[in-house]
Image (cartoon, rainbow, N blue to C red; front, top):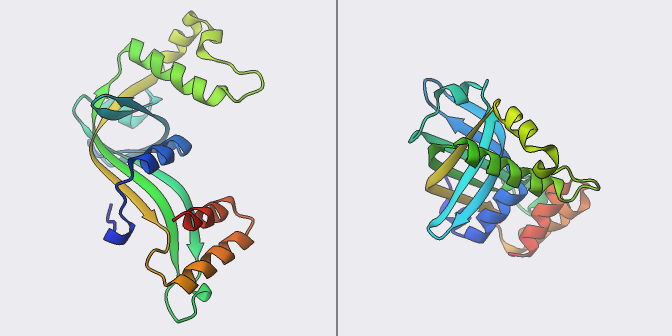
Length: 201
């Protein structure tokens, strides 16, 4: 990902936030042919750093070609919003403000026990807020392991991390404040979140 220096971030806490809040992301590979799958990601922290984990259907092309050591790219898009040039006090071009993370890494295939634990953690994260949560533990071991036969689980160990935080940092104060004001007028959740992020800069 090309990131101009002014928008490039080294904020690992921002990275964790973006991955946690936008876990339905793209798994991109280029084994035999370019392929991309939207899938659910989790980030697991270790003493050495962190790794990503996800799973896709075994019927998916990527499940047929990915193997240990292959390189993949994981793309997470956070809040984003169109920025109209009409909001500036001078002639300029319109743009898009956004936050995103891309992680390039090496694949390590999950064994059955790792896949089971991955599904347990993933289900817990998204079922916990439900009124009547259905955790893996409630489904029964036999049922879960039967369903697992159709899943292909992978760990991704990062080799490169890209964090972009494009929030009109290149604009003068008056334009910056006006962008926030215009974004806050909308009913779009992403636009209002970008406005909040800009206020917190």
